[in-house]
Structures are given as C-alpha cells and as structure tokens.
Image (cartoon, rainbow, N blue to C red; front, side, top):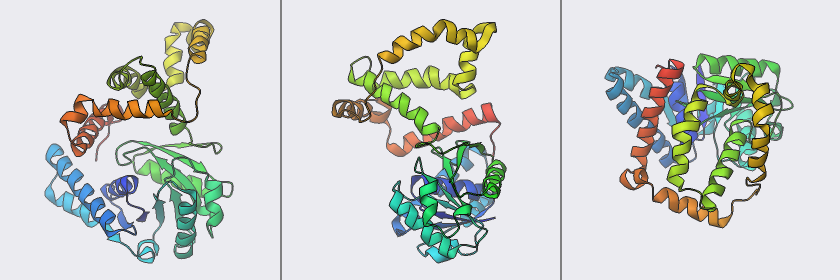
Length: 313
C-alpha cells in the first residue's frame, strides 16, 4: 500500500516509521525541510538502536529507510496514494485546510485519516470533497510502538471507510477501538486527563513530590492496568462475587474520595509551576538528556510489548 504522512512532527514521523517497518511505501510531507530532515534522522537513529539490540541485518535497516520519501510538495506526496495519515498541529482550522487540500489531490477511494487528539471529525470532514472517506485514527505516542488506535467516525464517514481502516490497522499489528459516537478527547485522553488533573492537584497540595506520584503510577497503577483495564481490575477486586460486590462495598469509599478530588477545568498556575519544577528535579531528568530518556522509554515499552502482546517486527 502507498501511504502519505501529512505533517511529520513527533506523531507523524512515528506513524511513518511504523508504516515503513511494515513494508509500505511512505511519502513524508511537511512545509519545513528541517522537520522532514529531523523525521528521517529520528527514523534512522531508532532503527540503528533497534538493529543493534535485535540483531537485524543492516540491509533491512536500509530497506526500511528507502521506503521513507520526504517532500515539500503536497501533490507529489498525496497523488496516487491509498491512505493519508494527517498529523498537523492540533488546530481545527489547520486540519480543515489540510483535509480540503488533500481531498483535491487524492484518489476518490483514498482514506483520509486524522491523528487528532480530540477534535471533531464531523467538523473536519466538512472541508473535504469526500467526507465519507474522512475518519479519525488517533494513535498513542509513540505510534510505532503503542498498539492502541481510536477510530472515530464523523457524521458523514461511511461504514466502508470504518471497516477498511479497522482492517488496515489490525494488519499493522495495532489494537483498534471503534468509538460508537464522537466525544471530545475520545477515550484515552479523557481517562488520561482525569489522572493528570488529580496528579497535579496532589502535587499542588503538597501531598507528594512529582517523582513519587509518577512512581505510584509506574510501579503500581500502570503495571496493573497494563494487564487489564479498570472494569476487569475492579471485578477481580470484588473477589468471587465480582464487580457487583466491589461497587456495593467500596462504592461509599470512592464517593468520599471523589468529593475531595479536584474539579477545576483550568490548570492553576501554582500547580503548573510545581509540575515543571518537580520534573526538573527528578533524578532521571537531571542525569539523562531528552533523547536518552526517549530511548529508555522505547526500550522498556518494547520489553513490555513482547511480554504482554507478543510484539515483534
């Protein structure tokens, strides 16, 4: 399949790497030559580290890199491709403009997918000549490693487009989830936003340091939720009587906790300042440069994916 990645920042370059790793020809489009160079540098750096760790042949690395073809010409990137993954900045106007321009060039059958983190596809697709082919395919960073994608149809998205995207994502090794209706932020970001708000509030109130709050997630909550989600987790927490028993007996405690939790909808400046300071004071951040932290994250993710999902390339 021929693919175009429109926008090659953090998310777009990761999508491109995934598509190339799975054997697809990928046109990388961006208005900035520097961003395109950075995308290829990122891909090569990641592949070199992966090759060293997994003992890939050098030839395989070069074949993957050869599938990534950068261009600042949108027509050259999109014309004749079967699938477009748009990953421009999270701005409705920019995304509508991108979908309008891409739909003028792409084949009638081409899927036009957006990486938006929570904008409405029903709004985005209004700008397209073929709204039935427009769909949200929201990845979790980094897309070339995290399996989940949230597939969200707009009001005019066809069932055929949903099915084609679902099958394509499954063939890539992704774990697709189809939302039954649009909601701002979809599922992943809404759940993440609740946790993030409470983490900020706990930090702001002096309950714990940013580093210790992160440890609670990575050493307990994240480990448990890596195996199963909240519904099944709490079902098992109810013993043999399951979730009904859990809700009956621990529901009142949750009510007490919820009443004491943050409800603000704008991050307080004091919480923002403490969060930035707290991250800067973390030992790992002080000891390791940004790219090293990224590499460490990816290595750990790959080990978890191998164990939990049988991940391989």
